[in-house]
Length: 343
Ligand code: ZN
Image 1 (cartoon, rainbow, N blue to C red):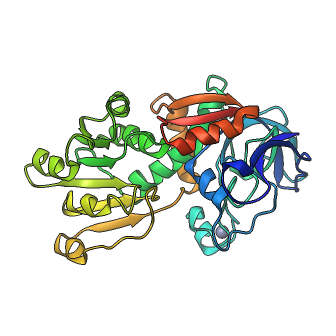
Image 2 (cartoon, helix red, strand yellow):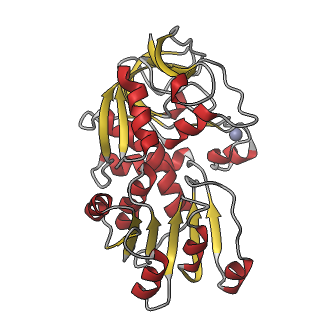
Image 3 (cartoon, rainbow, N blue to C red):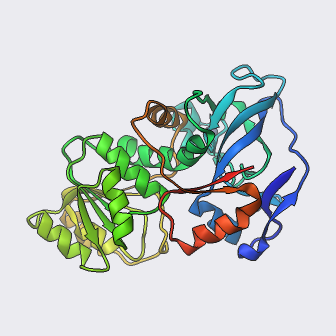
């Protein structure tokens, strides 16, 4: 079967669409015929690799997918061959104390499909049956694939961890990426008001406005920290969503109201930076980190996608064959929403 893989860690030159054997499934797995896969910035981190990441190579890329059940393992009860399904990309053991208490995204054996295990950018992939949810007929495979990772991540961060309430003000640092587009929509759905979005150009900001942003700040034209200070009568906002990291953290913390929360699920500009601790205790701030979300959050947020209250944003759909081109597009960074691959 065809798959978007890399044979060694490195740069985009290591990626190719190759013929590899169809995966085998265990008793609790299904073989998924992938109808749509989606890329995330995570794919570029995995390609580059990091100390301690030991993958079976070649590695199949892509953490998001949806498709049709092509075969089921001997012990699978919840789905049948022919079912349309979306797949929660978080893999957990189901046995450890975290899993037993419903926090399966903190599992002692936590893994992500496409990160630690083979992903979806292939004609077929093997996935645990418990990760599947039924995909209604009216939802395209592309939308389900585009939604999975970023929506469960954004929902868990904003709603479950951040406890965002109607009427609270939110600042989203960044307008274009998949998580931020999901964050803006979920904040709107939760009744946040106003929603400030900082972006790097007018196009991305215009799209953020369509998703629910109330106040747009172009960081090329003004100092966004000062703009927030001014727009909030020097009070700051209740919640900042910062997945940029090194380049923005200090300004993000300064933009918070006393008692405010900074939510983070990643760091596109780098993970290490200095913090002025006086900001944290002096203003009673909370920094709340999370990664992915438990299956219960995946079910909740996908229900919102299926009932039309959340709309995954797709930038471009590519045939699987053009996977390396899509990865280049992702790396170049001029992306508004998700890049989808069709096997
Ligand atoms: Zn576990």
